[in-house]
Length: 119
Image 1 (cartoon, helix red, strand yellow):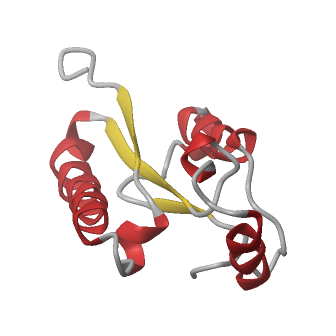
Image 2 (cartoon, rainbow, N blue to C red):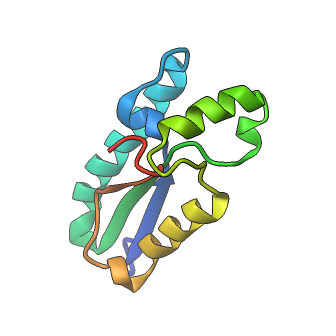
């Protein structure tokens, strides 16, 4: 990427990296570090034509949610302004946008994909 003076790095972080979560301290810290990594690396690589961004999913219907009871998922769903969990396709759409030329002037940003749960 440095030789070509062109590239795109996208990090998948988490809503918990943005706001923190009780009982998820280590996970929140790791995801928060990813967010700082995106912001710092984007400044370092921008002069070389390389963009660095992240996507921060909220509650997404993935196997990561398999340990939640139906009742727990309902509580989470009710907290989300859009009143639904996201899908892997929602996350993929955000990544696809960041990979595209439509986002050619975007770097150092974290795109939330969380239905308005955390803004």
